[in-house]
Length: 76
Image (cartoon, rainbow, N blue to C red; front, top):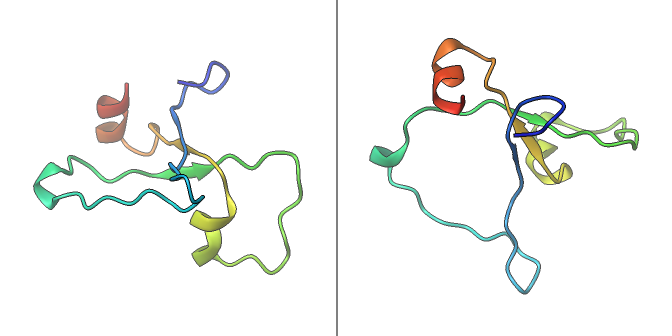
């Protein structure tokens, strides 16, 4: 986990062509949904950003373990 915040940081993997590495995950392998918080950085966000752009515009995300007690137990 991040030393200052205490939350795990995740980021997408890219292949040699610079495209996202994608993988199908079976539903029976999913334990719990995750609440992701973007790592904003130091630059200002564009004024025309939409919620649908959030997975494309940010390079890394915090996994919010404080969203509820189930997430806290799984990620702690």
